[in-house]
Image 1: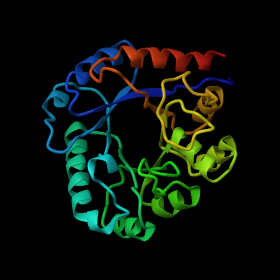
Image 2 (image 1 turned 180 degrees about the vertical axis):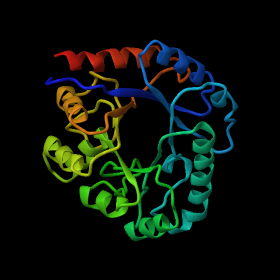
Image 3 (image 1 turned 120 degrees about the vertical axis):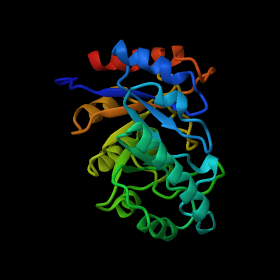
Length: 254
C-alpha cells in the first residue's frame, strides 16, 4: 500500500458492557486502538465510562432499539433516544454521534432532521434492506447526500455500501468510490459476503471483502478513523477484537 498514513482504529460496544471501558483503556495504552465507540442503551448507567479517560464516539441506538426517523409515528421516541445519546456525548466529550436513518419515507427523515441541530452528528449510510425486508432510508449515495446536506457529517459503513451495491446491481468497489466523494468523517469496517444481500457483520477473513481496497480507501481519505464492527461470543471480552484487528492491520503491510 502506497505511503501508509496513520489510521485510527476503534472498537464498538454497548453501554451495558460495563467492563469494556477499562479494558479499552489498556488497549489504548498499548497502542492497539485509539478510541471506543459506545452505543448508549436507553436508561443505562454512564458511570463506568466516566471513570475512564479515553476518547469516545457515540453511536445513537438504532432501529433495533426503536429509533426510526423515517417513521413519523416514531419521531417522539426517536427524539428521546437522540437526546439521551447527546447527553452521553456531552459528558464523555465524544467527537461524533452516529445516526441510522431507519426505514420508511425519506420525507419523514428530512422533516425530523430539520429539528436537529448538532454538528457532531454523522449520517451513516444504510444497507439496501433492513432485517425485516423493508428498504432502508439512506442506502443510496443520492439519499445520503440529500439528508446529510451541509449540516451533518458522514460515516461510511463499508459493509452497508456493499449490500446497497448488491441491491442496486452495481460493482461494490465503484459504488464505494461514489460514497467516498461525500468525504467521510469516519468509517465502519467488518467482513461480509458479496453474493448475499443480507447485512452480516462478519469477522475479518470470514467473508470475501477486499480489505486491501477498503484500507486503501481509508488511507487516501482526509479523515482516517475506523471502527471495527465484528461479532463476539463474549461481549465483555476483547480477545476476538484483538485478533480481528491483528488480521485487519496485516493488510496494511502487504
